[in-house]
Length: 124
Image (cartoon, rainbow, N blue to C red; front, side, top):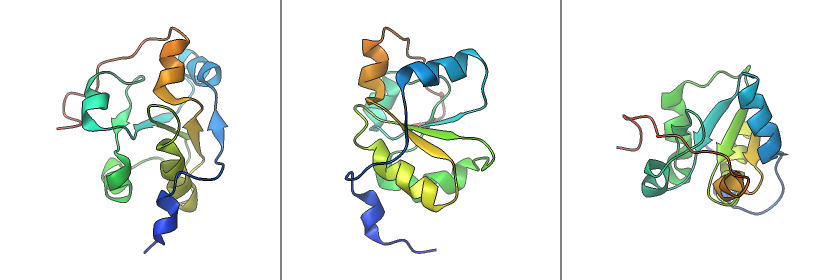
């Protein structure tokens, strides 16, 4: 399916999940798929949980490779919440229940929450 390039625009609203809510989901073992849309260098510096590397510029191709479960929510991560909007929009166009992390990794770190080492094979 060919999508118009407008999905890539970081403008407009998309559903968001707060840092507190995502942290609660992870603490309770709530099934959630995490995708990190930051640059390779940013991703290698640490991510949230077991987030997969899914750079915005490659979103459709990467998401085909990841074989996401459409029955589970997806949270897109980026540095500030700006790059995750287009990824969230694209996922929603594909029928996923997707959210952008409100404030991004910056808000996560500001809340004093830890980052984890990225998947060793990801981001290569």
